[in-house]
Length: 394
Image (cartoon, rainbow, N blue to C red; front, side):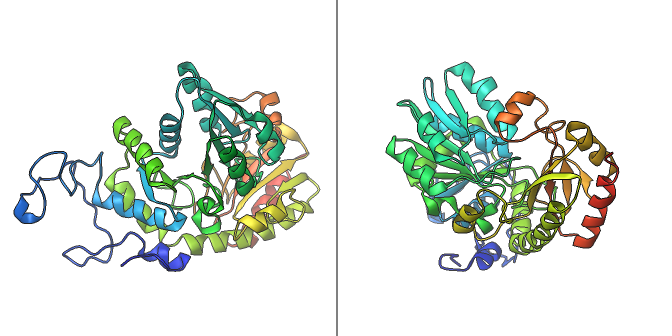
């Protein structure tokens, strides 16, 4: 059935599903690298390049297509493109929309490898980028150039938890003839739909909330316009960063419970954030559900919930961060986020260690920042675990 017109949870369960001849309730894993060409009697043409069905899994596969259709439906886009990793989606975006001499403006506190990919590799081929605090649209407006082809926003951002006005960013980008892409990983389509707010492309690391079980690495792009979708897909197919059918099957399974997982985790996150705000070892808390967050009102307008990502600054800086990382017991010390299990990490010594202290501070976070991804455990147990870890800070 078509998912058009359904509510978000109904789309999560039924989007992309079209029963095959067996009537299987779940989308089957079409674990095939290639597909036989059919003759005209079976509704297709014999000649390569004109086949109406599937040809080769790098180009398209029924299991992967079901996932792409589902996410495109959730994001209200023209089509989805599944990739082998979240960074594969970022690479596809850059390659499709940037070229020699092109300029990009991006959120400074963007996911570290997204920035590194541009600064270390695309810069070698003549592309340029400016990284600014896009939570202040004046910074974005000042950074635009005649050569700007892409505005790349992450909202909420990783790990600074800054929120960017997507509608406002779209207006600035479009006024300069640029496209706006939004990394929607932290919010997921359950809480935020950037295409509805004026963005041209939305992307996710589906490793995080969309899959939600810490057992798949993958990415997805959704374009608002069919022409942009075609440009992105062409790059994905040519570079060969397609998703695997078994990956897609697992993500479809995880996607069905996205709403339940997000609701449970964000309920606990608000309780934990309020508790952290009153703790003497905490300098500040960055949770967009708290009125103290500088973009709290903006988040209320453009999101349907505040999610389960918390950043908090420890009073003891880098050393305090290391102490807490060594002492947590229930929360898992690991990179990534958005799973059923609570994960904790210290950006200055882990995910963003390659950045200088000055660069980290310019991006909006200090050596004492801890990133905390709330899972679905009992909130009382999570608070007790944090309490015993924080008590070890001198």
